Image (cartoon, rainbow, N blue to C red; front, side, top):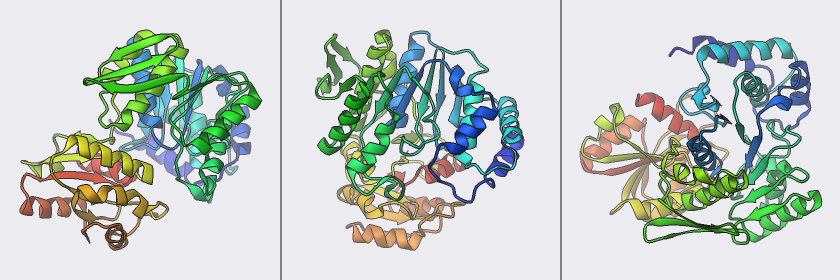
Length: 423
């Protein structure tokens, strides 16, 4: 499928505001009013904020709802290979024709007024959702929550806050309580909230805001529990126990994400979707095994994974996953943005790494250079060296270790580049 038409429109949208991120709702409200308020006509909304696990939790909820026969819209960001991934209409990625149409309408409605790329494309998603019938709308927050462009729904059916950790401190605050306060900005008066595993200070902030709003909390460790037992997932709340297959998405951190998804399905009276939530969910670039394509062909006797995690909590989750999934040490190919805590991400990976090849992320102005990434890795205790490209790194690894286990990681932007390159 060509996306030439939408690509040109999206490129125009990038020029409307000098900053990529500028948190406020004023511009969003203005454009939504010009579009006759599509956000007021959405199917029941499940709004998801948090630092880690938003996408995986959304994917499991969607699989569960669809497993009960429901039609589900979903909005997520950023995209990996192409923009269409951000907008799913009743189960299907938006078509090129539909995307071009709504983008053009939003451009016309906005006129020359300043607006960020995320703001105008979020309004476009709302407009698209109103034109296809569905039973639910899943909205993933882009950044923070309180001032995120998705936070314009007066009364969602449910809100969810996944684990809060340090990330985007330049926009959200330097401490976990400050960041948690921004995430808790999606809470609405009287609307139930699923709260995932949290640091105690973050939990205090979230529950305090919920209490002020009279928003019932369904909190991990208090109202629901999730664990594994004998190779199965066990979920329990006041309605009883669910004995289920382990999540289709790999990694021990997915157990908590699965618990949030199951709590959401319970709250929506869709418990019948519990098993498909575990077995049918797919989410790219989350410890995704690459099985075919030119990059895989460069290492025909080895194993190649891809993960887009990029903050210290993601590094810890990847570390736990590698401990479960692999035998021996792995080779890492890593590219990161210069806004991230590079050492904090890499430090948990050091015990599992044989060597790290550092790369710059192609096409990203905010990429950390390969040399700087390698130096940061060395400072975090890894053996590391720069490489010109992922392909070159794979060739060097294959020459040294034909049966190597390799993880490409460090950024969703790098993951998107890899998925496009490996098509």
